[in-house]
Image (cartoon, one colour):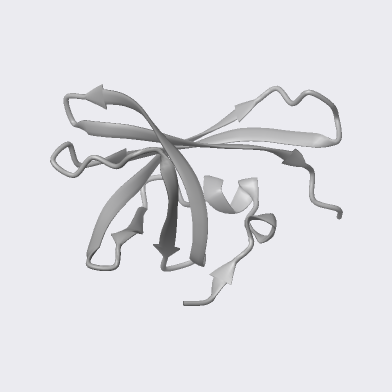
Length: 106
């Protein structure tokens, strides 16, 4: 599998994919699906930074641990993303991936 660097994936790209499904390779034999429920923009520490969170929803019967997983999306391709479980809700589990990085050069 050929992976994209997270530097190649932008806030704008993720924002357009809210309510879409991402395939997550849990291990060599298991894949689960997470839905991007929202993109939350945070106040960056400086004007050179961008800070945002990707919030994903997943099934309660297939909990994931805090870890870097291989993700796939039909429009973005394959990439690796570190996610953290943050909440258990009636409709499932919630995960967060936090980005705090220098803004890409235009």
